[in-house]
Image (cartoon, rainbow, N blue to C red; front, side):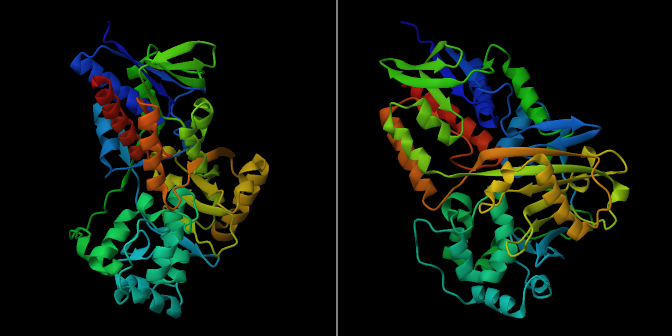
Length: 467
């Protein structure tokens, strides 16, 4: 009997591509008798990573970068030999829109929490009462030990409503496109809970643990990486490395059935693919349909997902009469704006925009404003332009706009998320051995988080196949 094993990866986003890459590497370096296939239902790879080139602009339709401090992203770039193509974001002043007015983001804040007290005290974002209430963090006892809690309840207890709604919520909710009062602390920012448990005061804990700034007159480098030709460069490179023998596009999975030895996958082209192990790297809500005979994955339907849209607007620089020296702004929930944030892309990523031009990228689709994503291109553009004109005095229409809708693209890590995922994985291990779940639905939504999950799935698959 042959030792050859077939591994199928379902989904060609960055998670599935990373899994395929690391599997191929292990097979090659260790001379393993395994075959890898990646099937992707759409006509392209990359999932949410999608770069558009138009009229000299580089426009990201999904994520525009990844955090430089997160190791899985940098490691994969080095493996692919792409380090020389990396670019860091331009840095500059960022702003927050509170009560329909742009305010400078207070210096010395970490994720909206004031590490340096002085800039916070002189900020116009908060009332004297709000500043006093936030200061309670210095004297409040630490919270009770709990398995999980919402980010909203945690920060409200420590700092009060004003700091939460005007600063923390726009920054943290924006990452997950979620409601801070539903978001799981332990699945998103467990470090804040641990700081409070150890140091009692969150501000004091951050002051003790954050690295001290070196006395440098130079501008600090940006925290984010992209590529000279856009984030999709990495997807293109992975596609080249993997080759047509591994990747099948326009190939969905209609049904997966467990057999005596492994699994049969009924593909959308009518073929059946046999697998000894499967990495499921598609959104969580697609799995119950593929495994329709098995109740174990129905629990995934309890994980909500929100929709978002982003609007890229290209202007001649002369159209923006009130230009702002900075990289963008986020919007507090107490404003009547429908955009949630705006990136001045021509300043954050200077290589993205031709000389003399400006590129703005705005986001819509709060958890309580999901219907905006379904409006027409014209309606969404008008909403965004209306909001921008309140702050930037734009006198002309954009040269063009590009709208990208991402339906149910943002999985919501609600309270109890980690326990829910752990329980589902335990059941899958028992009832569907050799099936592994990876991707933004589970353990982090950022590009490096997804790459890391792809790499971890490879370790699990190979351990399973070794028996």
